[in-house]
Image 1: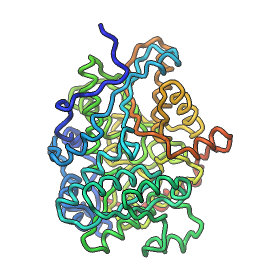
Image 2: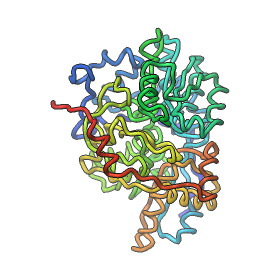
Image 3: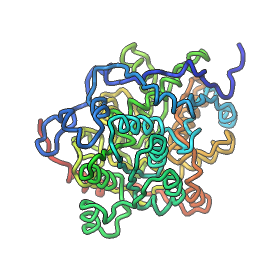
Image 4: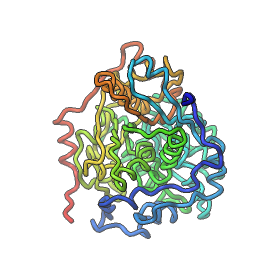
Length: 456
């Protein structure tokens, strides 16, 4: 048998022409979004003031298995897709493992991450609807950068509320967004009512994704012709990101491979949900035994230490409520946490799958994550983003288990992007200035105590 190449690309005609909607094959659906005013399941038309109509439809549709990818989106995808499936031969050798390790690399675009897959779709539907501007939030900056690219491509003005500590730590992310003509505002800010309220209550806050979401939603709902878009968590985003898993599965089939374990980093759930979608389908529908492992930061451990409950998706409590694994919408991760993956909750789809025992979750301290990142960079020559490095750490641990048992398992993980805008974090790690902050049970309980009381 011929040796599997280091990098394998699908041909253009092999690229997926449809997104896959995992909800259509789930035996039990995630609990519905709730209107925060009535606590009743939200209707599609109630989302129209916030989202584009087509995106609101995708958000609510749990029956359509496949959605056609519009030709205009396919054309922009072709600028940087298909992304490579890479066999990590050097990492396998370094670890001395009998396992075969593959990773799907999503960093071959200016945003440096997988986020562009959904940004293009959301900007396209906004343009098609005739909207005149968009607004969003961003944490580490990948989503804001990706959406800035997509909005520039479709000529739509964009306002980005960037989590304040990231705004200060990553000035070059801001510069890239501004290159694509986005207006970037540190959050919380004095430009919105909810931002002013948050600052009044906590003047020294370093911000959170929940804060930034609140500001972005307020901007969208008070500006004519403007809508809000989100880079993770939502059903529509996981739908668009399914192209990652569809490409990965097709490539592995051509190579005669199938993973025993699929590993992905987990913040809000966009890349993890996209990577695992077709493999989870095999597990649910065909009874495949593939293990799926979510890896999250110990400083923001929504899966491993959160509550499965209805919660607001934002700190200002203006968004629909979702049932998910959550640390509470008032939870603000430590500014010491270097990467993204700082959202207080997890995708309702992934939360339901985890709750039903169809996937696993682990958490790691960030110094251990950066140790894995350094090892990976040294042997595979790609500098990984801190978010991606959580998946690397998870994959390494799975490979070392195989080393102990002698099992020749096949491991697939998602390398969501590059770390070239995260050099201050790498410097802190190398200089011994990086700390492992882990919230105490008391801190988490204080946030849990503020969860809304919902009885259906």
